[in-house]
Image (cartoon, rainbow, N blue to C red; front, side):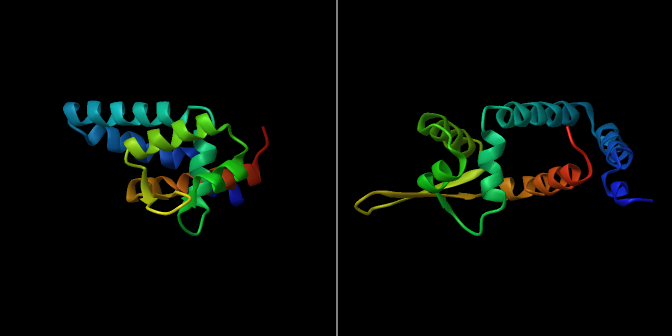
Length: 129
């Protein structure tokens, strides 16, 4: 077996199918709706790039840190940060300072998503588009 065995879609697919089948219909509907909502959120322009910055950061990030790293328009970045905050993925902390300082840090919910970036990087080592 080569290194790609760690990316075996069959194992993950079988595990997901077993989990899905084990859910009662109401819970299954809730889970599928939550996944769809998450994918809608993550599918917005630059959303994954914003979360990636938090996944590999050593601490909270400021708006200007993200703006410099991503080159995203301020309006788009502001919208993504607000959406992630509203969804409970980021915590926004504003300090009473001059000039104003605002920091964002990932919540436990966001941190639970961060292994996805490791999987994507592992996939990119093995495959090209």
